[in-house]
Image (cartoon, rainbow, N blue to C red; front, side, top):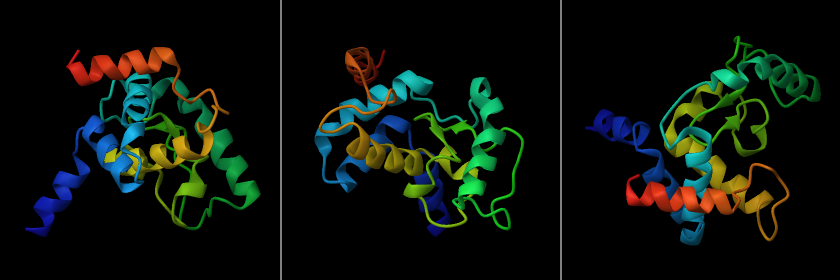
Length: 151
């Protein structure tokens, strides 16, 4: 029975994971923004490595390793693996502050994990005013409306 529950958690559709992440953070009002970011980054599909950004993996891994945020003994470099990943387009190397020590890069491919990190990042960098290009724009809010409507 436990394996069924774990499988369900790992395979949630990203918009549903966004709702859960927003509720866990006590901010259901950020669901449209999270879905908008998800739509912009992946059309809200559960994906792994973003091929277009895979070339950034080495620079991110080596840079975070140099700063002491990545431990090569438990977080080995894998070609393309530490770049942009998951439905919210998060850099596996750069989002160490939201993760426990020795997290694997592939964890960002799990919609709920990625949604939780995206929600925390949104609350930290997008409120009260956007301090990152990653934050949702008006176009992102329109995309969130389309995603909710099933477009």
